[in-house]
Amino acid sequence: MSAELSDLYQNVILDHNRRPRNRGRIPSANRSAHGDNPSCGDQCDVFLRLDGDRIAEISFEGSGCAISQASASLMTTQLKGKTAAEAERLYGEFHEIVTTGKEPEDMSDLGAFAGVHAFPARIKCATLSWHAALNALHGDPAPATTESHID
Ligand code: ZN
Image (tube, rainbow, N blue to C red; front, side, top):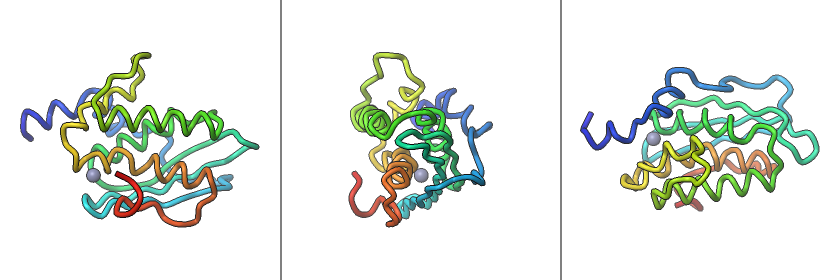
């Protein structure tokens, strides 16, 4: 692993890789979506139990690189309990972090992914699970793919 890449794998990312949170299918899920990042080989399924407009439970299953799997794990911890509008706003914040390297003002764990901005090919790895989550949230049956509408 290069020095640059090791900088990218900060403690938060390593921790989520070693101990993924909310991994596995939720039996009571009422929404799900699949995400695919063919440029890296990452796969991600996101499962939600929506209670009205709120994400009561969220989980993921997936395979792929460390960035994609750590991001999926962290995403579930960030979105649990959030409304659709709050989830959209958090994704906006995360997208800005991974594309510009801007650190979050509230020292959120999302900042662990700021280093991704220096590796444009990895941005898709980081955002894959978020796209799947938003698709699940909005009931979009189309699989999220990094080859179409995301940057
Ligand atoms: Zn990847």
